[in-house]
Length: 99
Image 1: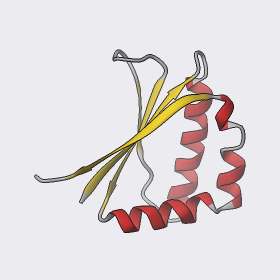
Image 2: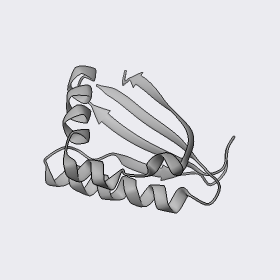
Image 3: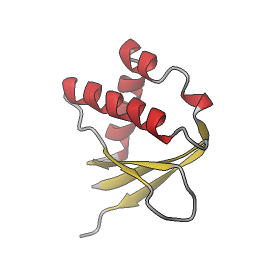
Image 4: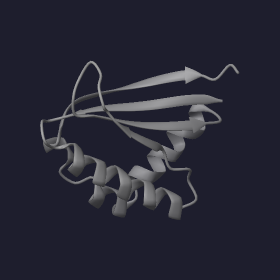
């Protein structure tokens, strides 16, 4: 099993709007049978205006296939329209769950 964290650093004042997009996308994922991510926002940390979307996945191949499927969905594309205007940068962390 793997833990995948997508870390998004938003522009100042844009966290709520971006979080709304992630919540809508999570709802769409649940409707299509995919396991939606856990969503976190910063309370304190190295950087302000941060969102983390955390996925637990059985395999990286399965995760990548599911993400390609989800992001090719026209409804998902509509939800994510304009997200580049909300984000400064992002990264992905991948961990193998050992226990």
